Amino acid sequence: MTQREYSIAHLKAFSKNIFMALGLSKHGATVVSESLIRADLEETPSHGLSRIGIYAKRLKEGRIKASPDIKIEKKGGLLKVDGDNGLGHLVSDYALNQAIPMAREHGILGIFIRNSNHFGTAAYYCQKACREGMALIAMTNTPSAMPPWGGKKPYLGTNPIAFGFPTRSGAPVIIDMSSSVVARGKIILAKKMGKSIPAGWAIDREGGMTTNPEAALEGALLPLGGPKGYALALAVEILSGILTGAAFGPHINNMYNDDGRPTNTGHCFILIHIEKMLDREVYLSNLHQLLAEIKQSPRQAENEEILYPGERRFRSFVNHLHQKLSLSDEVINELMRLGDDLNIPFPSS
Image 1 (spheres, helix red, strand yellow):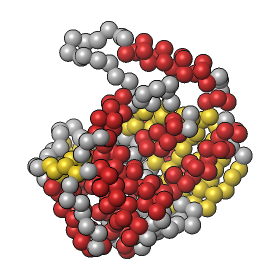
Image 2 (cartoon, helix red, strand yellow; image 1 turned 90 degrees about the horizontal axis):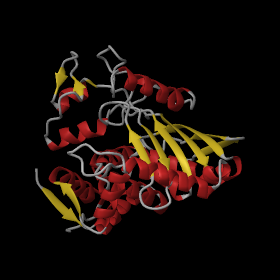
Image 3 (tube, one colour; image 1 turned 30 degrees about the vertical axis):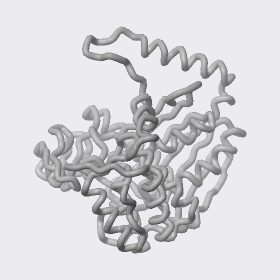
């Protein structure tokens, strides 16, 4: 597999132009593009530019709305959001923009979203909250990909959950994890690139272990930590699917299916204004001490450094920010075809 490098600015411009050509506003195209590019910069390519192709296909078909009429109902410390079948990035960003000033007033705010779609990395929204000096818990349900513990047929999604906590400087604490051993997007990307997957990630339709990504996508992903991952996925399903009024379990349609139905994905965010809890400097000082003590813990011989969650992601982002971004031939070819279709030239470098 070969990789080629491209200017980040050129890729952002290309992505924004693609989404605007598909009917998104300039702001909307910017939000989606920044989420995708950031995922690539953080070395999470399964949620990066490799996703543009499927988003574009569904937007062109009208199966996802480019200009959704997002409706918000405010009830005390709650926001109930109907995303009107918009891209999850747009719906979630809009909802958080409405929620942040409310959280400053109430201290804590629950955001429950229905009629949405795939929203990229949950970490992206945690980072947004951290820049506002707030903590965030973010979760979403996803199409069926994982069996209940002891089963072999998918029922629950990979159902990621993320936590974000601002720090005084440097990397915020970002914990972003799927309830499965691995995010389904990594298996989709492996199939696209013709690569095998590690043993222990998935089972085939008969319940046997597989390293074939195609067989894994036809079968099921395995829960993280066995029954613990299954239980976590169920909790996320209840918060994101049942409480929001969105679809749940196998009733969430997969955007990769060509049956024309919307996905009706649900998201749940819990936004916390830290200064309503305790003095900001006390929070920052105590968190700094906590992280410093963790990093100074005795290390195993083979480990040069102890990292806290979010440091690797942040370092990857900073290190790549002023460099060119590497893309695989498979992703490049898909983006080139999409650009040709919309008369938007793909950058040469």
